[in-house]
Amino acid sequence: MSTLYYRRFNLIWAALTFIRQTLLFILKDIPVSEDDIDKSGLVMTEYLSNLLRHSNGENEAVTLVLSDLGENIRITLIDPTLYCKLLKSGDSDWELEQGELVEGGMGLALIKHYFDDYQYTITQGKNYFSFEVPRQLV
Image (cartoon, rainbow, N blue to C red; front, side, top):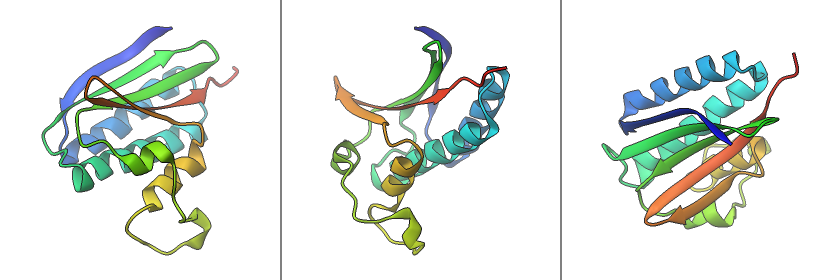
């Protein structure tokens, strides 16, 4: 496994745009399908906005890492915010197809919908949220 991208930044609302643009440019160059690039940006934006809204994440140092696994690219976000038991357990009664906006579980349903095999762990006081996208065959 080799690191393709590694950057720390302060978590502020403007950082969400930065993350999406970073994912777009790096994943497009690898290449990864447009669909997987869009999903990655959407899921990462959802995760980061939840850190800002629910986990007292404003101005925390957050790290974005993209790793080359050969056939897949792993996208990882490392953060020191409050640990999210709901994200760890994956328990949510909300289904994406319901369509209604609700507090609690909708973001998790979106993450699970696009990357059901995401990983969420805590190590030495830091949360590691990651998922993988396949390389596109050229």
